[in-house]
Image 1: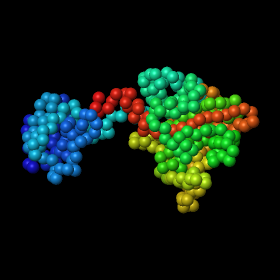
Image 2 (image 1 turned 135 degrees about the horizontal axis):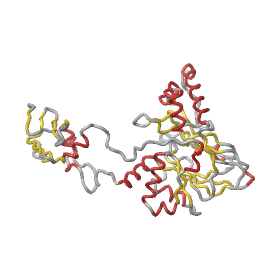
Image 3 (image 1 turned 45 degrees about the vertical axis):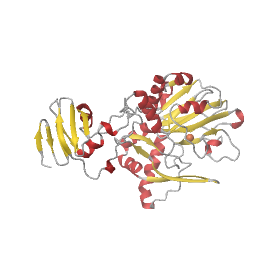
Image 4 (image 1 turned 90 degrees about the horizontal axis):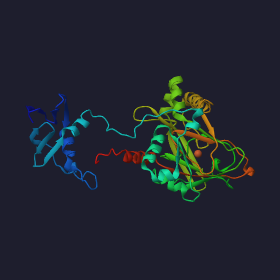
Length: 375
Ligand SMILES: [Fe+2]
């Protein structure tokens, strides 16, 4: 097709330039325009029903009209498309669509416990605005306390269901953190549990974790939580080369017992789409034997060791005691957690835990923000 200028539009072989009323202009590809005609989407299912793969040839415009607010195109084959200019303007820069759940993270340190946001479970169930505040807390700070948990067997699952479907692990839909006979996991003993994120042995480790304190009358057993974003940001500044190694190298994790043999490779430091630290994956009790070249380990192990030591620095470690009726909710990729040893004979300690995924919490947050394309 010959490029030609007509009333604010420059027609090119592969697309067209549109002049906007504010004096700016932008280029749009014909495939993109045809694929994203408003009629391509079904208002009921909200899904695209137009199938561009069913078109034998590249879309080609027959007639183009531009007004102050709308671009009209009649395509070869006769289909009419109408594009509001504000719709076109929102895609003009070729940048990712605005995501209300893509929020900057606030790092926290050892003194954070009094400031951890608290939400009453019955109030959360009743109030969508409060649920939105809870999700925003997890997205920005990674940890929140849910109080006034009912003493019912399904209280944990009911709470988690507000943020997504409960997703199972080898330990079931929910797991019981208490002393077990023949334990399959260090968590099920009275020993101290070193700082870790849960189940790095899974290809997609659980995103959000919930621990409902059903009973805690033992001596010891304090919870130990660290914001890995705070640590990794400082680590990045102080040891940039070590940071790069931990952010780029996949190491093996495992979870093996009689009936399972789960293995996955993970990066210790996780970065988001902006290159910012979004979390870590770390667990001494699930780290497999590093099957990397020994000369590479000359570089990697000192970096790994330095980072693990930094995680334990008192500057970052928040210690607190979970009480009956509380449920701690946290981002399992961001909040590295553990517990101090306790004396099993001194009383009862019973936490019920489960997981949902990060993506489902972001979805719930977007819905409550009312920012979908079909609003
Ligand atoms: Fe854990």
